[in-house]
Image (cartoon, rainbow, N blue to C red; front, side, top):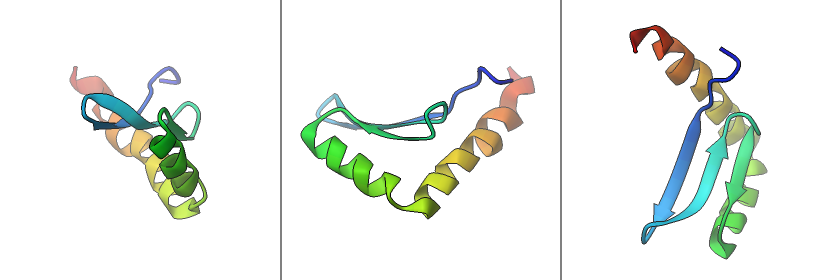
Length: 66
C-alpha cells in the first residue's frame, strides 16, 4: 500500500500547469504561472492537509475494488 500515489493535475491548453503529488506531499509547478500557484497552495496548511488526506480517503479506500 505504500506505493499507491495520489496525483491531482491542473491543465491549461493541454499543458500541465500544476500537480499535487502525494509522495512529495506538495504541489509542483511546471510553468511560470504554475510555480506561482504551487507556492501559494504550498504556503496554506489547510490546502496541503486536505490534499494529503485525499490519498487515504480516495486511493486507499478503493484499493480492493480493482
